[in-house]
Image (spheres, rainbow, N blue to C red):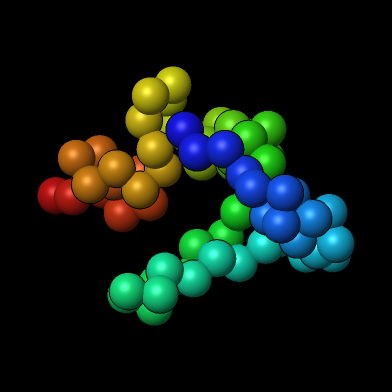
Length: 65
C-alpha cells in the first residue's frame, strides 16, 4: 500500500469527480476511487473477496466458452 503525499491529499480534496492518475512511463490512465466505492462495485458485478472484477482467470463480464 502506498501512502499519499500532502500534495496528493490536497488534489483529492479539491477534485469534484474521480481523480485520474497518469503513469508517465506508459501514459496509462487510472481512476482513484475510495475503497468503499471499489468494494461496492466488486459486489455489484459479482466479485468475491480477493478477486478483482477483471480477473482474467474468471472473467465476470465475458464468460469464456
